[in-house]
Amino acid sequence: MTGIEEVRKILRDLGIEEVLLRQDAQLRAHLGLDSVDLTQIQLDLAERFNTRVDLWTEHDLTVRQLADAIGDRQPVAGAGGEYRDRGWWRPEFLDDTVLNARAHASHRVAVVDAERTFTRAELDAAVSGCAARLVRTGIRPGDTVLVQLPNQARIILLALALIRLGARPALALPALREHELEAVIAALAPTALAVPARHQRFDHLRLAEKLRERHPSVRTLLVSGAGDRAIGHVDIDRLIEAGETAPAHRDRHPSDTALFLLSSGTTGAPKAIARTHEALGHVIRCAAAVSGLTPESVFLAVLPVTHGFALASPGVLGTLACGGKVVLSDPNDAAAAMALIERERVTHCALTPALARQWLLTRTASSGPDLSSLQVLQVGGARLDESTAARLSRSFGCRIQQVYGMSEGLLNFTRLDDPPEVAFTTQGRPSSPGDEILVVDGEGRPVAGGEVGELLVRGPGVITEYHGGAAAASFTPDGFYRTGDLVRRHESGNLVVAGRVKDVINRGGEKIPADELEALVLAHPGVRAAAAVAMPHRVLGEAVCLYVVGGNEGAPSLPELRRYLEDSGLARFKLPERLVEVPALPLTAVGKTDKVRLRQDIVTRLDTKG
Image (cartoon, rainbow, N blue to C red; front, side, top):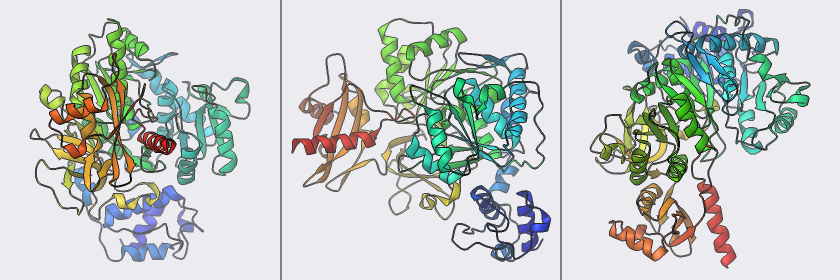
């Protein structure tokens, strides 16, 4: 094909009618392409022609100018072609992969929450019925719907129904508020918002109504539990019923965006992460394999399902794809979660280190329920220290599997047959055989084995850009994603996370990775939780402030802790210079320690002191 023919084919695949495809037609002004369409074009050109075109400038390109950008280049196999040839990317849609009614017994229970239980057949029927009813609300293939629902069956049903329809759910944590959601809506231009009327004392419906007034793209509010306030809105519970067949969407392609995840927002507003059917399917299959999931597995989701860890690492989607059962629970009640483990015979659960420590306290308080069914406790989202890992293993009598990954695609796991000295001290290795990792210094040069450097990765599950071209500096010219994490390679082949590039305390030019210090502090018997942050220092620029949650006898004093760290072999320049004892560390919406708040707190304390 010529360049103009290739461009016309790409635009036809986006649903543009042939009659509109004049060579002088402008992409935005005449063809009405939105930000999602422009992103898809950029991905197509990069994958098929190894061509990068900036469609985000003020200049609105014409069909002819886009064809000129291709020039005489011939389509290349590229990485996508290699991934398909190796079977890493399969011609499957995410909803089919997850529901897979042909491969698993339809009468078996698939999803359980506090209100309802769905067999696999009932789940599939409810998803199809929901997709059919969504069409009548005005939602169409290609639309984006922001979904901000708690851990209930309706979040799974609605997300899969949107995907089956060819619409794209953008999954947002229920804890996000106006500041974060404004940026997400501006970037994605969703046509609908799906929210609970209220959740944990917050009025989500009122906020959604306010956001709809500000953003013309938002036409519809999908609401659960609205009661008398449902007038003028769509009741989600009436959508998720069986009885209708989902409308056929013949234009879907496995390379289309199946859903959007959001970045953690640790370096600013959350960024939208487009996950295609074939790439996310690969991530789920690999994660499920190294987690030991089978049709007999039961996964307890206590972390928010709208976050990548509980959703697809392997999480809810991986468990369903393997034919297993998903149990949904509230993350704030450890005792209730353990009761569910006994009742539902849970085999797998995923926690953050902070939640894991809460579980340890609850488990220690009494003998509690029978947890003998629990086989694998996955811990990720932050580095798990060795002492906590060992305590978890003893207390719960199961395998501890460390998970280090990100919604951008890379997932590392310790393996279930790793010896304790490896499983407790490392954060695993890639689950995908196609992932390429580099550990580099500040100049982008590979570091020596065992040395700390920034982790770069590319592979069949890893994104090559953020939606809308945001944070372009996060990607190298040859397609590696800059994780921003400092790691070193362990002799076992696993990675050890040393901290963040931006979570490093610079004490007079000496770099102190916070995670390294925290792991040593947590080994002290008088410390339950710890977080190291930078505090201002008039001479050194920065010094170490350590926030500590003490044990039953209280936290150790600063001199005692400094002596303990020195005896542990820590370099003296890494020793904390201030200690603040707190009853609990503040957490972000996904259960990570909120270091932004801690940094603000120490500045306030220093200012107050004078």
